[in-house]
Length: 192
Ligand code: ADP
Image 1: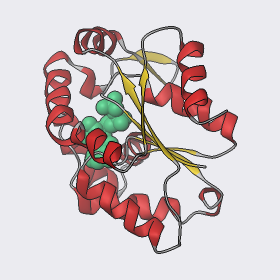
Image 2: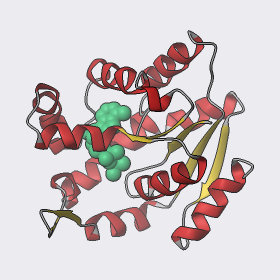
Image 3: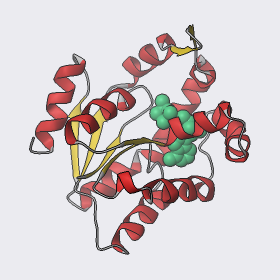
Image 4: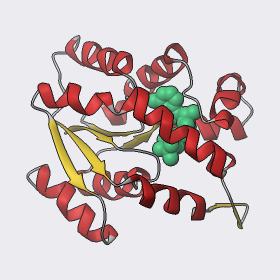
């Protein structure tokens, strides 16, 4: 199965991507996680991406698209994948469609996690992650950056749901509720 998970920052994409991908037996591929791993590893890619990420902006499409293409060429992605955080622009979505089409493949479904903005701000400002056993706030979860990320999402990423809807690929999923409830809604939309 080839699935894309859409939704604003704070909608729970990362959490649901891990669980749903596990249930489907495909890798969960998160562009945010790949970028963060490159930033901590201080790779060239990480150095290029860091300033954009810290500002809450999107990393330019050329950089992101090349990275995703390499990741999808890995053997574990051949039987399917669940993408989390990609595509985030129409240009990225077109690249994904074209590179799948070159292999006579297409997406099976696009799942959009729907959460209202008030709840998102609340979730993101309280969010913590573990680094070396310590609970820290992600650099881009600071309140000013959160607001900017939501704005970037509204302008550049939200149009993707209409784009996928026109292609008959979109399922909108209410992402408020217990984690397991949301997982069940996602799996139901995939016919599982
Ligand atoms: P969230 O969904 O919580 O905003 P992510 O972990 O998906 O966070 O992404 C964090 C940051 O990584 C983004 O704000 C952006 O700078 C960068 N990023 C992730 N995915 C993409 C993408 N597909 N295109 C451009 N930038 C991206």
